[in-house]
Image 1 (cartoon, chains in turn blue, cyan):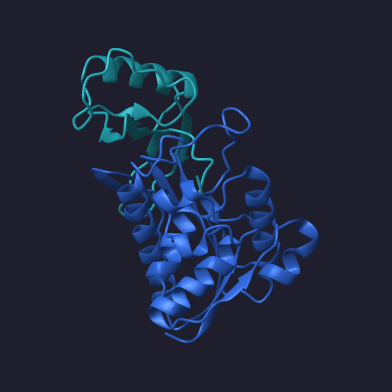
Image 2: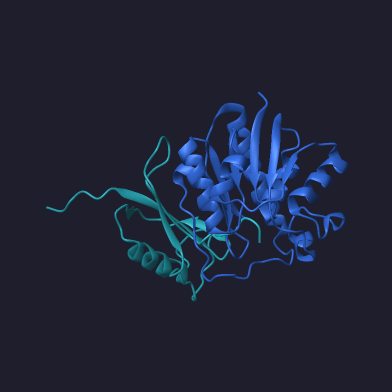
Length: 194
Length: 87
């Protein structure tokens, strides 16, 4: 695999597990997240008590370095149109693991305008259904209600791991062979979409 | 003479389970028609892989349409909304 630059936007349920599973990639990894690690995140995401209270991107940067000796670039920033070039520019692949439609639209708009390959990882509010989908097939969904409650108690941690693993596998296939496949996943079924 | 309406495979996700509706559905079916078909099917346990659920309700779900490509047929995908990546 030629060394490429992969930017992961969002280090939450999907993004944190993606980082964990990307540690053998021959790639420069960038992680962007403006949020901080809260106690509830430790139950449902790949974050630890050592990162509690820290910025999520910097927390996972520290965790990956201490656990695996892996280096990655961390950006504590909220992605908006005005900083998209700075944060996403030069990427060979952008993986969107965010949780709001505004950021997804920024990611998708920038990647489409710059012809940058972009993969979206998305979870349902119930935390038991996910989509791993390339941007050419992706239309962002709105929350059913602003600030909608999501499953944060760790009950769906195994499913987050399952979806994160599929996300990592799809991204790795693209990095290795240029293959773009999209899927949806429940606990009992993986369905290829495109 | 009716216009030709290509068939599609209808895939349904409900209650964390997933399955294909056993019969072909018109690829041009409206979102409302697709949700109605799925509602009746899930309530009666007609979709293999999805347990019968008399309270099945897909009004807030999304219908995606994927045209046939390679080995994949026309597909109608009825699914929950997925606004999150980091709950």
